[in-house]
Amino acid sequence: MNLLDKDLVSIQEVRNMVAKANKAQQEFAKFSQESIDQIVYAMKEAAYPQAEFLGQLASEETGFGKWQDKKIKNEIASKAVYDHIKEMKTIGIIHEDQEKRIVEIGTPVGIIAALIPSTNPTSTVIYKTLIALKSGNAIIFSPHPNALKSILKTVEILNKAAVEAGAPEGLIHCMTIPTLEGTNELMKRKDVDLILATGGSGMVKAAYSSGTPALGVGPGNVPAFIERSANVHEAIEKIFSSKTFDHGTVCASEQAIVTEACIAEKVKEEVKRQGGYFLVGEQLAKVIAVMETATGGMNPKIVGRSAQDIAKIAGIEIPKETKILLCEEKRVGKHIPFSKEKLTALLAFYTVEDWQEACELCYCLLENGGLGHTLVIHSQDETIIREFALKKPVSRFLVNTPSTQGAIGLSTNLAPSFTLGCGAIGGSATSDNVGPMHLINIRRMAYGIEACKETKETEELSNIDIEAIAQLVIQSLKQKNN
Image (cartoon, rainbow, N blue to C red; front, side, top):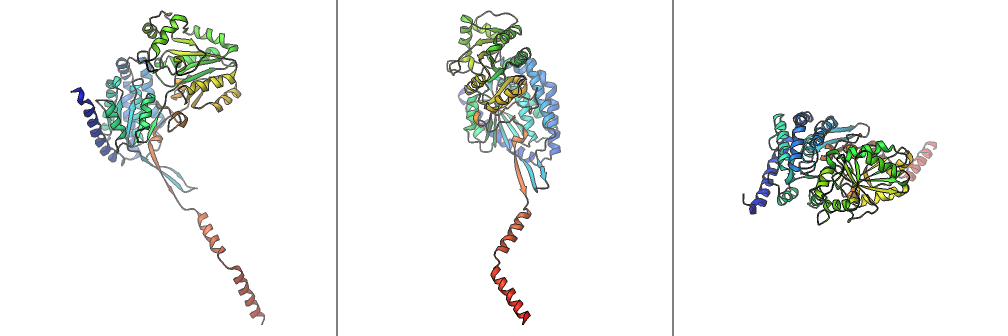
């Protein structure tokens, strides 16, 4: 293919896909809830056994994370998501309030444009396909070019299962020639009804600027506060299990440990005991040098990498048992790499005097790139936990749990999801873990109520001339007496 024509071919491919998806979705919109549920079940059954294969494929193609953890994410995206949504009513009459005489009717949004990142490619595709079809929609994927092969394979598996279960041909698509021009065409196409964007802040901003309704998620810069009453061993164990999960590629993974001075040494010793290594001097300088690009963005060469990989890239020696590289930091700002989001095996470490100062510091960290996303606290003091929760601009406030697993609904009862809303403060249209109910329109049928009749009768009575009636009564009595 002539590289000069790649953008044009990509745009035409998108136009063809939208036309086919539109036709298929109009047919799919007539399906019953039972038929839709059978198709969603078939896709889950097809994807779940392929979790390991797809995890390996994604890890090999992108170089990000660990295939073992990508397998787990694929299992969550298929089975856990399915188990959560299988009983949902999304099409037709979904709720009826007999007392208030209101009937809610679910209708599909239509065609969904789904933007997929390279950090979590296969799991995000599985999850988005399940929730899109569960709500009666068609879906077209714009894949990250660095994860094209694994995304296309995932779409192939899901589409085959859907069609064999009775779905119309053309309901699920994926761009095979991903370009910026093609993605812009997809987002701005008039027949596309909603954008479901997962990825970097630039991508999400483009989605919201497209003119098409969008659900996007911003970056996470998750602080984890270890308060003095916490079980320190368990807190570090949970933070490390989250931060090392797929080498930190989930945006809900912890980015900084914040703890109080009275337990700081104990926390640091526990960090070291469990595989943390504090960088200082020249080692720290060399790691900082490879953390970001010239424009201040995350360096893709270290995203989703192990501590050993990062050390090798930076040209430093670290102990073999090292799981996480840490920097004792005091500052927060756009030019302080450790105070920002780091989707890899790097953590900042802050020490404060008390929980009030921790509250202020966590707010600053969130303001530095994670507003509306997630915050974690490890504490046994319910009063402080509640005070902290009331003051933090986040959509998920997690207590005594790993942030990654807690935010996506694995270690909490939150809805299993790979699109985590950040609310208005984070530039998102929702603060929820996005699911099928975010991908439907609800038509409300409301009956007139008796109060209207009573009001009308009262108005009619108020129009009666009381004095005239009184005169008639008096005249009638006089005539009777005479």
